[in-house]
Amino acid sequence: MKRFVAAAVAAISLVGAAPAAAQSTFEVGMEDEGIFLANQHLAPGAAAAWKQWGVDVVRIHARWGDIAPGKEAQSKPAGFDAGNPADPQYNWAVLDNAIAIIRGSGLKVMLTLTGPGPLWSSTEPAKRNRNWKPDPKAFADFSKAAATRYKADVDRYLIWNEPNQKGWLQPQWERVSGKFQPVSPHTYRSLVRAAQPVVKAADPGAEVVIGELAPVGNKPISVDTPMRPLAFLRSLGCVDDRYKTIKTGRCKGFKAAKGDTLGYHPHPQKYAPDRVNPDVDAAQFGDLKRLFTAIDKLRARKRISMSKTIHLTEFGYETSPPDPSSGISTALQTRYLQQAAYIAYATKRVRGLSFYQWDDEPIRDLGSGTKRYSGWQTGLRYNDGSPKPVLSVMSAPFVIDQAKAGATATFWGQVRAEAQGQITLMVRGKGSSEFTDVGTYNTRADGVWTRKLKPQAGAAYRYEWTPKPSLLDPNPQPRVSGIIDFAKKEKSRYKAAAALATS
View 1: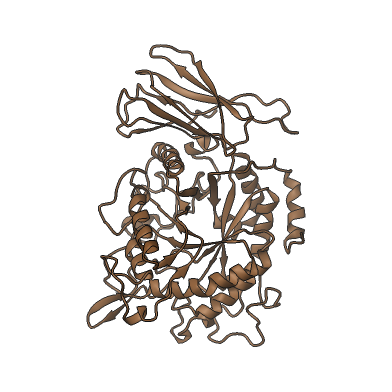
View 2: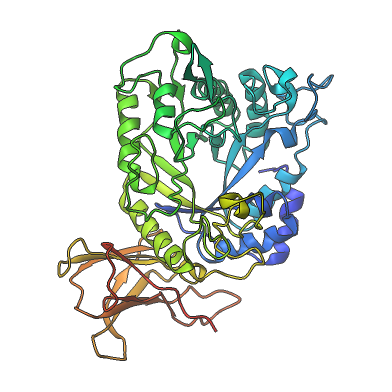
């Protein structure tokens, strides 16, 4: 099938052909626009590395304002046919190349169609704010063009990025008679209703993902205050705090937003993956049940149209170093990312988990407090490309879920790098210096294996597997996971492997 990105795909062959991926049932995703949109000379190496340790899908932004013409113009450029991807005023080159690199490395793409758009796409361009109330019809034209252009390479489209955050959509609120009323959910509903049918028409069979919300917000003190995600969802469905229908104001003539699935960004900040946020309208990783309850109530009342499936499309922990203000230790990052992967897998309506990002953004000093360490430092590597400890276990995470000391536990792992279909679980008994075999177990197509066992008191566990032979490594040697040591006490029921020692 012909692709617009064929020329760039040919270039990717220089990095070497990747092995064919097994059909996954639980997806592992990655995202890093800093590489794939801003520093593309680094992208082939990143994509090859991701493929090697078992990534299935890559999330990337199609940024409307960077692709469409007239970024700062108040009027739509003359003669521009926004629904036609072949219009010469469109500039798809950077995105074409990014998608080519991803696809050429044997990975799938999920494409976020998002603003800010060009200034002329705002319904009030005189404000000179590209985030301000984008025109749904203009966004539909862009979405149609993107889905038409990339239908041979993309099977999943995500509608907008974090519409409950002022950096992506404004205003969040308006003040009426001294009280703040939500605006962004209603704007977003219009964008979804405009974009979803044209994407489906342009790329029949594609999956349309809606939501894509950030996990926290605040009580409004200005029109820019980010909305809490569950409050946003209720307003999106035009219901009040008790899920009673609202029929007035922006809800007059309500028609539900429609998608196939929900996308969500459950960044926990410093919270452990199983820690609950006391704010009942926030929903971080430990609050997924709260998110599901809200979605199910809206679905039951036909206030949103979508399946029960959830994609966790952006997730990570900032680390210290380099950010002592917002980061956790690299040892905690190693533990928490594995725990989150297990919890996501065990939560049956979650389709997959995507990690953000590959490399830390550079630290930017924008003031005092947390502003002194601005940017995102959730990478699996530092900004200079050196690996964080967590990277040593990303190809084979290992978690033992033991709800009560002394009880039978669930042993879980996922061999993300391609294995020969089996792992061997190993134990080092208390006081011993050698590991011995417990048993050999089959993996699923997605590399997941589980086993119910009662851990030995004070023992340590790991597992090993042998990669499939390849042209570069025809006689691969066994590899091992990190070690879970029951001699080291952890309060969490989810024991996760320590990072592997590096030479």
